[in-house]
Length: 527
Image 1 (cartoon, rainbow, N blue to C red):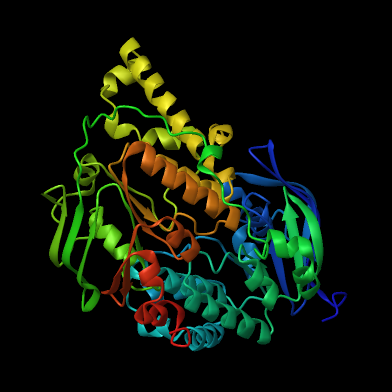
Image 2: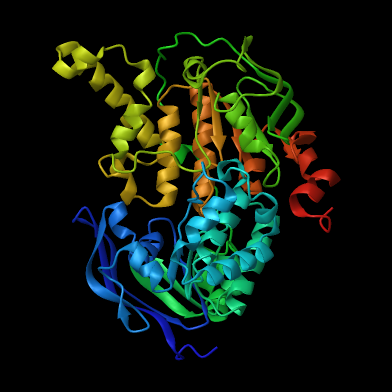
């Protein structure tokens, strides 16, 4: 493709700041030819998502502002327009994190996306196109979107964007946290969308996937364009191959390089050893069985991984364990206490804490304030004493702040404590959520895709941090994750689900070679 052809999108000398101070983009220029796929690469914090927000008009919702430069689509300036106006001009953004309307049905989500369509006929044609690309959305049109698997939610997010019949589609991390089979389908869809004439700008941590389907690529570093050119040329450079494709494996992060977890006495007092025992767990949503007679035991002090393809029931299982969902049958016991009928706050008091697949942080608050929320159940000062700032309340707050800062150091967040969460990269926000869970002083830590969206080096560092924390604090970890390198490097035991049923359980090395696991997770060819 001739990179000098007609330009669908022209970004010139763009500068963006958050809070009027934190500069996220510094003179970024990007030319997107009509009909091309352009990949935007870079580490977490490089400014990729900020660039997408600036183009789509959604920057103001995240506390950011364009301070210089321009963004043009077919000669029309987009800077200064709101997101709805940008959509009406044909530029549609699919943000990171599967931002669907969870309480609405699949069909209602699609109808919301079609509100910008030019006519009823255009909406009908767009819906047919979406159902052709994603047949599962047609099958589940009346199901609540929040009950879809991660992969299905990503399909819905893309489908909702396509309902507006975009000329330019901005895709921010479409493969984030998805199983290999689902990623392959997303790749096929992007190619089909592009073949139909839609220009695509693709932000991706999975550089190998992005460059394989892109015509052109740009690499951002600290808010600036560091490299750009044809995708095939970039993929062949040593710098890209080493830094973004993982051809040269990074050295593991030694535990000694991480700040040591500080031993402190928990408000829970002595912590007797406790196993988590799940027996014949069954969960139904209407006529759909999300889990069927699932059993496994998480032994005290171990790291237990729960894996499987999208829709296998992993997040549903975690939601039952944390009290978000009610089980239809079976038993969940922790240290002899039955959890099935307890509300989430009662379960939290037993020492269970969790992170979420989709981030659940207060984005406008600082990192420090978010971590203090995790200390809430351990605080003894009443509302009146805290409001009056009595000496006892100030002393207690100081103690909790000290612990917050210790945990922030463990996860390399100390320098970011006073920044609003919305200004952080996705990878940093994932670490904030883990830190907040640790601030509750958990006995059992439930992690839902803790390294989704992180680079290889960040995943290695996170694995080392979790292992160090588990050892130092004597906690138990149950983790869901699609990154098999991460899982197999730190798990003591692995349980595999497929279509809501347990198909394998055992040590990592044994599970890795199980034919049923290979078939379910990697496809029949691998098996």
